[in-house]
Length: 157
Image (cartoon, rainbow, N blue to C red; front, side):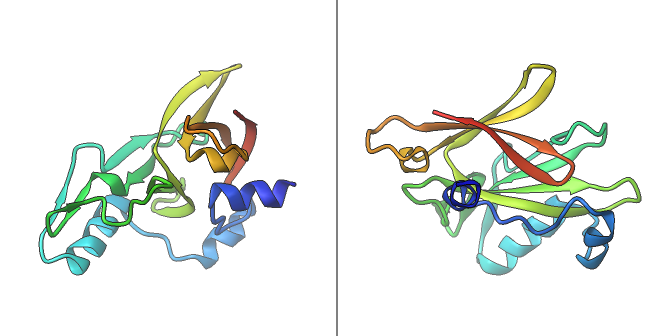
């Protein structure tokens, strides 16, 4: 069931909690520069909205991490070119104490709220209802906590 839920969330975990694992992935100096350069190569004209990059501590370690919202990109006049009925791609990057960032996950969703629940900061992700195994029209709300380098699902409605 856990693996099925992860597939529904379309979250691609790239690392384990072991610090040696992130040593195998190349750290990037700044996800904002990295992501913007990617789209500037892809698009003849790329414009980035104010919510393209959000810097916040997503795993409660006291270090600012980064969330990238591809829905805030206008590529050759098209807003969110990779957005679909399932939502827009969001990329989640953790910053390490030694400096640099690595991507821990990507998810397609409509948006999120980052709130404190029971003493921990959590994401409440608004996603397509099928991710909650529903057929109605109302968005699905999946609550996840980032612990270490992993997304842990708390609930889905």
